Image (tube, rainbow, N blue to C red; front, top):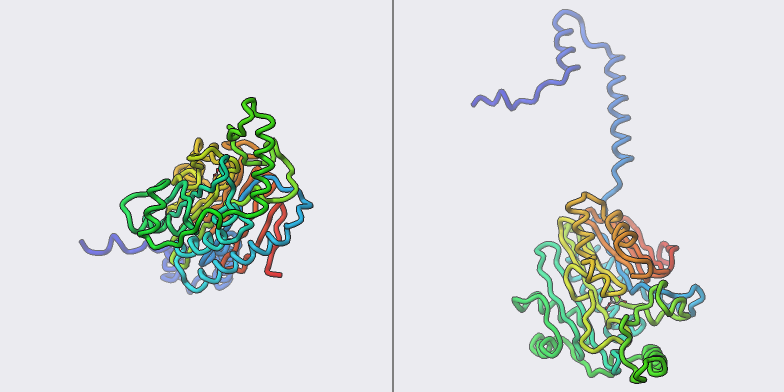
Length: 382
Ligand code: ASP
């Protein structure tokens, strides 16, 4: 076929000018300058409408729940959030892959005893630690998770090894701990995870449970001891009951990744597994939609497959990442259930919570650097 049919059709003013040029002198210069002005206006309008797209974006959380404004350690938490945000931001700026960055950021938060993940994890009702973590690559939907591990220093690193070195997605309990030996990740005795503030809280809850449970046996709280601001232990003075950690990122190549890690809920029944290691509940990433990490009352996040729900609202209902996260937090979940962080495929960041506090941070290549605990946000590096 002659390529004639594929030639672009001349626009009407061009045709009109050509016709005029045959009999008359030329198109008026006044008309040309009017058109040029119109075009300039249009260009300016579209520039104003299109928000600049970041080359990379990162969001982190350190748990959601109830924390009083006069909590004494707020400044320490702000600083801890800034430190890991800077660490991840530098790696992304240097061209590191999002998958690697979310692993490193979450591992750093696991090592920080102030957070309920890795060192600093909460206790089961019998005084042990059982840790959960997951990681997901939005480029391939590859994912790995571990549940109820007892001797793994950085559960997120073991989750990565499950993803890379096994045909499986989730390993649990003794099998996961055994796998850690072959996977070459660092291991620790249980005492490594114990910190004084968590031990104190555990003892308080145990004595309360012993005095209130009819059997007097200190049985696990059937509702768990996650304390959102709708929970029974609202307005706690310190923030030691928050602390699940997570990170979501978009790298310079447009790839998304998510990772989450937790000690679970205080005084949980042994063997209890929360939402964090369940792909689609507490953790999810898909390059077509978003990377999502959750924190809160795990059982609710499992029931509502929260992380996947955010992704599905973007994919099937065409919602923005912010609207999708807002809808799930505001309409699907109940007040006090928890929070979500998400990064969309355009690098936009959502951080929504229905508790009174969520430790969180957001940074991108356009210079954004925000940390927050309550509703307000502190911007910039001090
Ligand atoms: N979602 C976690 C769990 O249920 C707890 C938390 O985020 O605080 O295990």
